[in-house]
Length: 251
Ligand SMILES: [Ca+2]
Ligand SMILES: [Ca+2]
Ligand SMILES: [Ca+2]
Ligand SMILES: [Ca+2]
Image (tube, rainbow, N blue to C red; front, side, top):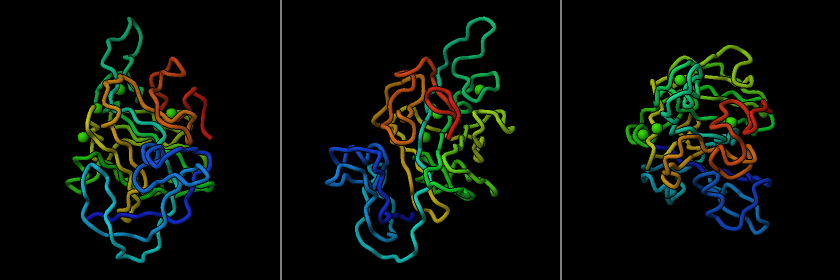
């Protein structure tokens, strides 16, 4: 069983919208567009029920009273399709997002989360799922104990490999490698979910609508508040794990 939640009063005034679809595509399930034109995560209490699958349809009913977790992170960037393009002589592979010198499709995939809570958050026990992992109820990544994110800072989870996890690498972001060995984001028809330790899904990224073999990441632009677009729309970079789309550090 998966837990579902829609939170009360979580609005994103910097995310203008014209329709509910604008909000659901930007922030995932449960988000709707208010009459004022900003995205709002709909009020309810915790819902329990069986996952209804990749359509992300929210179950009906109101069977729980647990205190909802705060919405503390957004998915800011997803690289599900690092390019396998051959490098120029003496250059690293263009798809080497984790910077370990080699291109390995599963290893160089990554997810970038940004703390939008306005305060320091402890992400211990948060989980990441691709669709297959969600169906199996077995996360691809469990955020390790002690993962403390200052306000506005980023957490980057690579699929694998040997990214530099020392302080200051990747713009000073917190860098981790998927505890399950890979994130396994299919290049089409996959859904990434981020869940609170309680099991409540707090953010989703639907690959399905963006299954165009981009050979680069999708990032919010502007960072954090904008809609997703292909990374190179505004820059020559194919991805920016741990930094803003222009390569500058968070926050
Ligand atoms: Ca992939
Ligand atoms: Ca690599
Ligand atoms: Ca998958
Ligand atoms: Ca980035």
